[in-house]
Amino acid sequence: MADSIALLLMSHGNFAKAAIESAELIVGKQNNFQTLGIYTVDDVEVLKEEMLQKVSSLDTSKGLVVLTDIIGGTPINLASQLLSQEEVVVVSGLNLPMLLEVLMNRGQQIESLAAVLKTAYDQGFSVRTKQDLIEEGEEDDYSL
Image 1 (cartoon, rainbow, N blue to C red):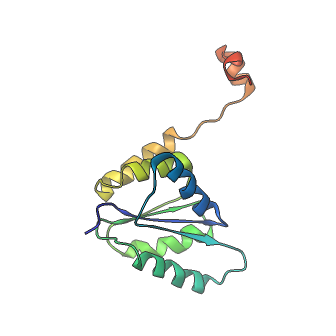
Image 2 (cartoon, rainbow, N blue to C red; image 1 turned 45 degrees about the vertical axis):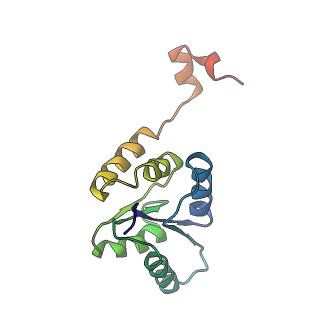
């Protein structure tokens, strides 16, 4: 039996692979995960078979979380085909804060992890402009 929820990262190009490599620098080596990079020259049916092979190589007894890069792209469209299986959560908007939360909470039940993902996505997003800093009186705090 798995000690953690299985994880599949899917993205355009090498983003998924680079994301997990970056996350491992922060939280340490991970197991029970796979990555799948998608390129414009790829055949969708071949990609689907590769995705299914990667999922079958994982221990999904505690569930599977699939993190994809953007809504409407090939990665999430393919990953959504996995939703017919039990205990699968598919998420778009892959970013490092979200990935770190998943990695630090993979021991939870999949329903709890889905809630953590929503919070992590909201809290991991920030837009700042110089004008915002001037209005807050913090211009010098972020100077190099």
